[in-house]
Image (cartoon, rainbow, N blue to C red; front, side):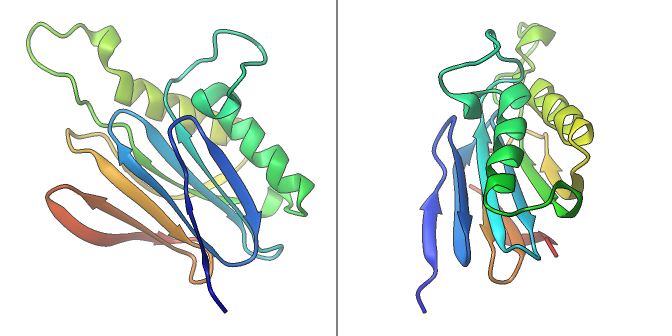
Length: 165
């Protein structure tokens, strides 16, 4: 049986049943969130760009932490996932613009991470692993068959972040 490979693009949310490898490539200040209900075998991933939505119902709910996590959880529930069983892993949120003249308000990576953490807590989703911050961009990959979440940077090979089970 062939495993489906899904690239989760900028401001996107992907949810599916069964075996899949989901990946967020090029996470700079963006945050990737992998999520699974291991019993229902429903998996999802969001590639979040910004912390807060400017409207209550944005055109692309995956763009904002305040809407992406809710959208991800609700979409997974529609496919049979139960919120009480959801487990997540988070990667990204690097500080890609830095220097003595960069104001704190441009610390977008850390603001994204904080917003994602708040949303996971609000939705009572356990976070099993995080690889966030720093100055390196990342690729976050989740294999729903094994439960393994891996992280890679431009200067490091894939390494196991956690196993979502």
